[in-house]
Amino acid sequence: MDEIVINGGKSLAGEVAISGAKNAALPMIAASILTGGVFSFSNVPALKDIKTILALISCLGAEVSREEDTAVIDTSNLSVFEAPYDLVRQMRASILVLGPLLARLKKARVSLPGGCAIGARPINLHLKGLARLGADIKLEHGYVEASADRLVGDEIFFDIPTVTGTENLMMAATLAKGTTVLRNAAREPEIVALADMLNNMGAEISDAGTPAITIRGVEGLNPVSAEIIPDRIEAGTYMVAGALTQGRVLIKDCEPDHLKAVISKLREAGADVSVSGKNIEVHGNTPIKSIDIKTLPYPGFPTDMQAQFMVLMAVAGGLSVISETVFENRFIHVSELKRMGTDIAISGSHAMVKGGKRLSGAPVMATDLRASASLVLAGLVAEGTTRISRIYHLDRGYERLEEKFSGLGADIRRVPGGGA
Ligand code: UD1
Image (cartoon, rainbow, N blue to C red):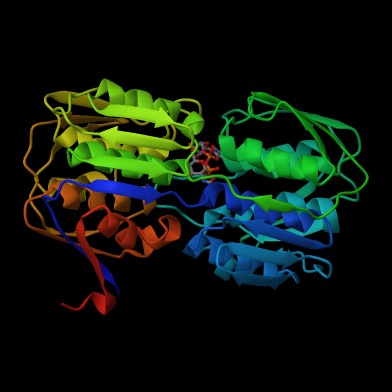
């Protein structure tokens, strides 16, 4: 297996362009199931999770082709309603095909996503919502089996704002009879991007991006071309890298409006952050201060940036408390970060990070996507060499990571096969 090897201690400087957002591309690609025809997506990142959703959709009978950052999907002959275990187990977000399959083919059989490194991550709210729209739902042999001649709009109240749950229900409700209102809906920018695409297809969705989304069901939808929005978590990761290495990094082609919580926290930590159009510049010209962080659904501070900020707090001036409220068990990066010299204590959903530590390079193992990003950041600022194994987690969500960091002056390379 490949490894990433980093010789730390370089201050990063230069420009980095942000790729399309994985978490926006996945539901938008799933939305192409809703009607037959040719869809074209641009700014699609070259990532393992995108390969998985494209493999899944072609397994359902769509024709898929990719050239550079464009994916063309012809769903005219899509007729298979089963998403098999082998694909779903590779990526939990495969559950996003459930709503659209049910709406178009009147039935769906989707493998239940298995256990997950960052807690139970159930899909009960997706299923409860679909049942509320009239779907008959059974769990048999590890699969969700859903059927409905035609879904019927209703009011759905989510116990917790769930991102993919909101997306699944929004897609399913586009073709339902009557009006659906999703309450306590997630408000992430990726949900707004999906709603924009669905409205271009002929759906009637209003107030996406607020906690109450209204979807008036329509009789049919049309295929469209859509551009994937920039990846706010990739952008945030490079922003932290700039501050952490006391560098000067210009993050280009991003959407600063989607990064307000991250920008605000970086400024509070003492970094100089300036925004101009689609660019953000981070100048880490002063020592980092310790701050407290609490993850929340959007527009709060994103859980997908928690691990990266923990590394920043490990080198900051004092004591920081990081509270994770979105996922249980999302501190799995801590044990590896401790091997690099950080001083972090966990108590329930809180991590106490004693800053001012000098990190030292070590062999470490990636555990999940964002945890792996934190190890890369730690490696960039550590003394000596860090070798990160199991980097397939990184390849799920960071496009050309080592190339982008090298471009900023980091000493980072991928070593194929884990050899020297
Ligand atoms: C999405 C993102 C992921 C991000 C997360 C939170 C995608 C593909 N992934 O994941 O990167 O970390 O949002 O911002 O967009 N929950 C339930 N029952 C459900 C669904 C969720 O209890 O049916 C709980 C989860 O366990 C979690 C919380 O709700 O505690 C939020 O999870 P959710 O927003 O659903 O995360 P994902 O959509 O899986």
